[in-house]
Image 1: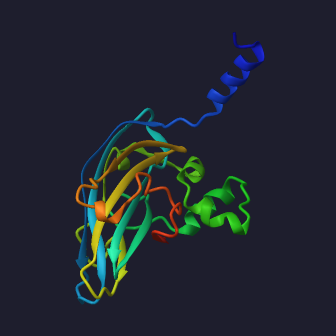
Image 2 (image 1 turned 90 degrees about the vertical axis):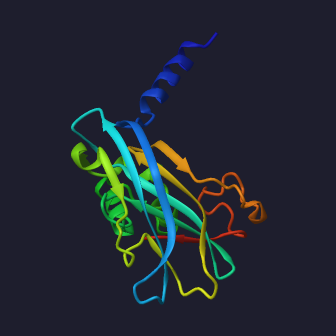
Length: 211
């Protein structure tokens, strides 16, 4: 039988656990592809993601869509990590915006821990400002402007390609929904099941934080 102290501890931990303020999240028809800039000099990754969600209240902490992908470019496997906080744009959240959220909350991040703090949505999304549900209830991330994709792959000697990508909707420290593309036909790359865990496989992937 659980002791009274354990019951109190369990209740305290449950109360302290972060809870998402969004619900009924649906990620539909995500697309990610490699295009060329208008000048033709650089390869750029573009696409669109549709995310529908409902809110318990009229306002809530800002939802953030994490886009993590692996591309083959110039013979290397390159993993990109992008946080999208503004619908109807391709704009990644800037490092300064995330670090300012820590600062406003009175959280001091030592210099050597800043890369980890920047790339962990479980840590920074509870600190983001409140937004109105009107902007996010039906959100589309990405635009048709081929010069303003999510990130660039630069000049490539051979045609680059997107191998796999994953979307995660984070809100108030919780991953409210996720979607992952198929790995069918990618057996030769030996991608681990948890390929999307950031910086876990430095011998296999070149990691790039998009900011």
